[in-house]
Length: 285
Image 1 (tube, rainbow, N blue to C red):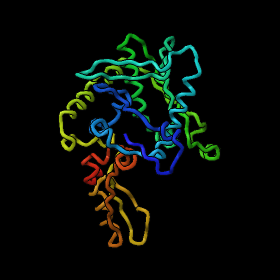
Image 2: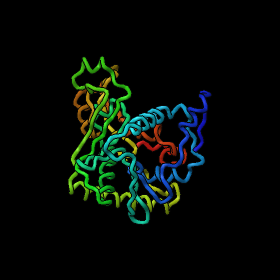
Image 3: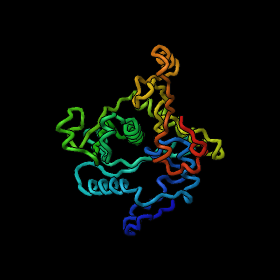
Image 4: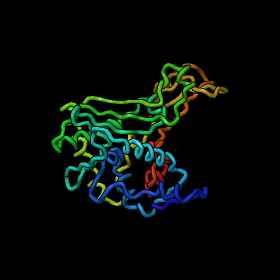
């Protein structure tokens, strides 16, 4: 991966954000499995061609620094332990931030934005935690609970005082119990995802199916009933039929505006987008 330095930042910063490949050949980490197969394969194939700017990696530096600080403080738990299990023709891997063997609790440090808490957007953390739990149980260790301790980088004390629905602390804990049923579901999810990735590697770049809507962080398309001279929608619908019906009932000054699904990850958070035909062709849903 090529790291540019458009702001002429100190080389210490540039070196800090210059990363090696996250996965060894034939290995897929718990966090990698949250990505689409197309993104995984294209990132691997075009690693040496991908270009990112050092300034765009500032939050990665902050996250790495937080992990380094917390890992340096020792307690009775295991820290940064690596696990791997063979799946298909590959290996699934994971490095657990902290594991309390006595209580069977996996803990993971996160840096996040407040919006993640406000929108309860925890599916990626849940899948990551369950993959860790599956890895540990396959290695003979018991897991009863997963805990994610998140430092909210944009937390506002002022908003916390005036909005009861706003996170009240700059540290947020998301946790859930691990059950045999969840582990069975996780085993199936992992097997299916590894098979999908292995199949994608046999295909040319443009033949690989686009990432799913969830993997692209795609909002669903909407149809808004609008009124001439008014900027905001009168009402927003999930289908065109209901929107057309309402606009027809309200009269000639009303019309329907189609709002396509937007794949938010593709434009701003996918490093391999320039090698993806879905993105290059203007894919939005």
